[in-house]
Length: 146
Image (cartoon, rainbow, N blue to C red; front, side, top):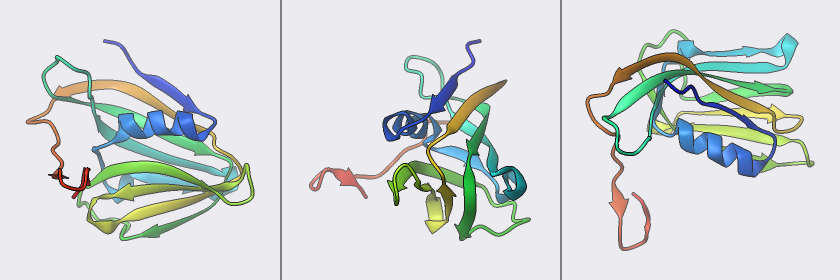
């Protein structure tokens, strides 16, 4: 079993991590911000998009370093309702500083104010079969997701 390990130090790298985390499932309790350590952590059950294999999920850990602050919308501590991670993006403010946004289904979001991009994602080992591949409604007339 090949464990994926990725690091992002710029927006291009972060786009790769975002692609691997698309449709990852987590609960608000799987997220931790350690302000004193300037670190954000989360455990996710990411969908493994490897072609030509049965649908499966993997447990993965994600950590973001040099986090100056964190804000959330639509995330309630203690809520056991699963969220699906749609994207991880970076918007510079005073380069290399900026904010990393984690966008979830249902309108929930996290914004991490960062000194710079320093993100790592690592598979933690467990793999299990998924019932199906995640699907997305596509508006073909506009060429974008609906």
